Amino acid sequence: MATKIDRDKIIEAMYKKAIGYDIDEDSEEIVLDGESEIKNHKKKLSKKHYAPDVTAARACLELFSEEMMNKYERMNEVELLAERNRLLKELETADHKTKLEETNNQTDIDDEQFEKEGVEDNADEIDNE
Image 1 (cartoon, helix red, strand yellow):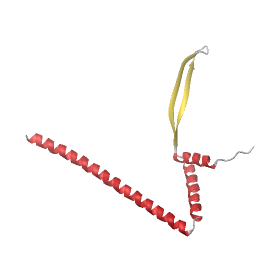
Image 2 (cartoon, helix red, strand yellow):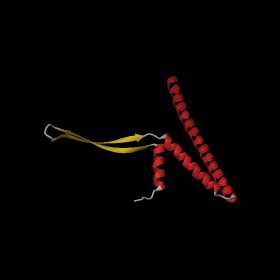
Image 3 (cartoon, rainbow, N blue to C red):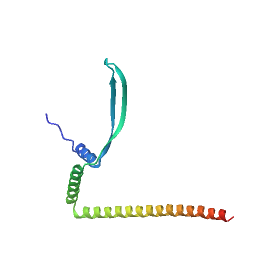
Image 4 (cartoon, one colour):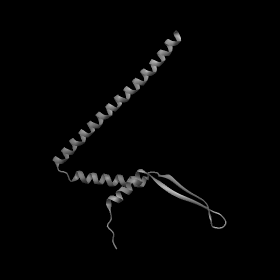
C-alpha cells in the first residue's frame, strides 16, 4: 500500500529540527509497596528542549536556495525587474524602520541620562543647603 508523501509536512518537520524546538513531556512515577499496592503516585509535566540540528539546517538551506533559484529562473526580464524593485523597496522600508528604532533607543538613553543627571543635581543642591 503506497502512501502519498506530504511534502509540506516533511519540510515543516525538517525546518523545526533545523531551528530547534521545545515539547511538553508528561511523566508518571508510581511507587508500589511490597504487596503491589500503589503507595505513591506522581504526575510531572516538564518542557524538553531539542537543540538545532546542523544537518537539518544545511538541508533546509540547500532546499530553499534551490527553490528560490528555480523561482527566479522561471521569471522573464519584466518579472525580474519588478521583483528587484520590490526587494529594493522592502530593504528601504526595513532600513527606515531600523533608523527609527535606533533614534528611539537613543532618545530613551538620553531621557535616562537626563533623569539620572537631574537626580544627581538635586542631590547636590540638597547637600549644599
